Image 1: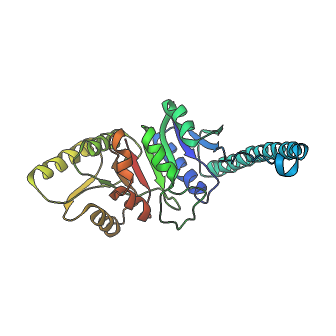
Image 2 (image 1 turned 90 degrees about the vertical axis):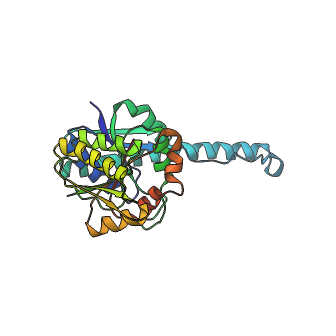
Image 3 (image 1 turned 180 degrees about the vertical axis):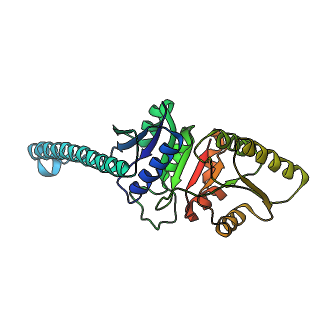
Amino acid sequence: MKNVIACIDGSSLSEYVTTAAVWAANSIGAPLTLLHTLEKEATKPHEDLSGSIGFSSREHLMDELIELDEKRSKLALQQGKIMLDNAKAFAIESHAKQIELLQRHGDLVEALTDLEDNIRLVVLGRLGSNHSMNAHTIGSHIERVSRVLHRPILITVGEFKAPKNFMIAYDGREAADNAIARIAQSPLLKGLPCHLVMAGEDTKDRRKKLEEAQNILEQEGLEVIASIQSGKIYPVLTQYRQDHRIELMAMGAYAHSKVRQFFVGSNTSKMIIESNIPLLILR
């Protein structure tokens, strides 16, 4: 059975990531995996100090540095285990049913790529451990994971609460149609009122596309409010989200070759940076 993967990094968002992952796992009836990766720190090559302090002194210093690196690795491993144990205890309190702990050496993206065949959904915090909660940026891990992983990604942006409604940002393109199909077939958001919103000009062709998407969702039992809102994408979606108190936003990602464009300088990156609600990216 494919798992919901919660990426735990020790940042202030780890608790929120766990909460979101428990909700998702229980909603779709999937096991929960709490994942922590021990990424290699960038290290500078040791300088050749033999000319300044002597060969024997240099060898002694090298031995001490190697010993220090070994101690640092052991401490990082122990810290990771404690982090995962604490996350597991929190997940149990949040009524998680099946929990697996997984600690991997290496890069997060590499770990997720290795696990991809067994992943149903990945849950990430918008910011990594190197950012403050109020930073107006996107953690580099989000873009990197999205470029290589072909699985849905749920991004938390603060304290997570189970949503009571959700909005689909729809533009009538292939990626948006794929997102509609994924949402219609998934139990994740079943039972929640759905706001299907298209920004821009209200034309006959766009109205037809919107109605087709609405029909697909309604055929699977979703309650859908569909509308076309005049204006540019980012301000329209932001205003609609605020006016209707939307609690989760879903949208489709572009094809593999366009994922970087999808994030860099795009309306999507603005939505992630400024949003105070979770974002579900579907590929």
